[in-house]
Image (cartoon, rainbow, N blue to C red):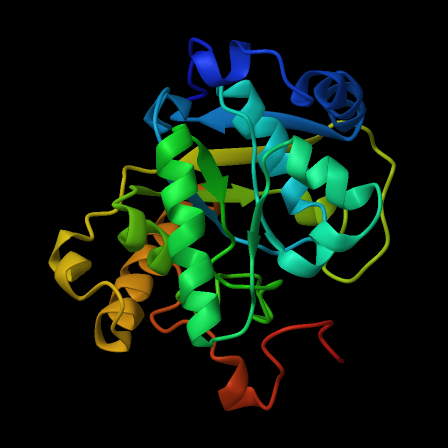
Length: 254
């Protein structure tokens, strides 16, 4: 069942650069996708959160952004800090409140994560983080092994992680494929899950021994949600790119 459209939060009702962007992006996306949001009421109307979706198409961010906007929140993503130094693009990212984060696993990266989480909490904003880090390598488009960034960000700021699954976007833009403009308004479903309980890992929020199993819990919830959309069971074991000789970032080579 598609959830009723929730009341807009004060975050969305305040004037921002999102409004002119939404006026362009939402109608254009509506030509390509008929987005059905399921259990949208589970996304907090106020306060900070980390939204963790699955990732199987380059078009996913547009779908998730429009769905988030329809649920009453401004869609903000983590973005590589280097993008903030690009003329015009950097201005747009800063103006819309996107979150700069270093992608390295260094001490400076950890500090950046802590600073980002502090800013998110202070401003009561949500942020969208793809825990897989790139498009899934799973041949059947199930979520692959996750990276710890989403959980690290959430635990550092005491922010709830909201799992999300979407299905149907790959019919519009197949993974590393070409955009399919016809037929218009292909069905895309987005289901929102309950916040993932990470209290057992909170006391060890910066330790790999906690981050890895916590990430696995989040990926398990995303897979479970996706299984409800696909009406088939998720694989018992998530795809591990390194075990199949694949790079975990960048374009997937055939």
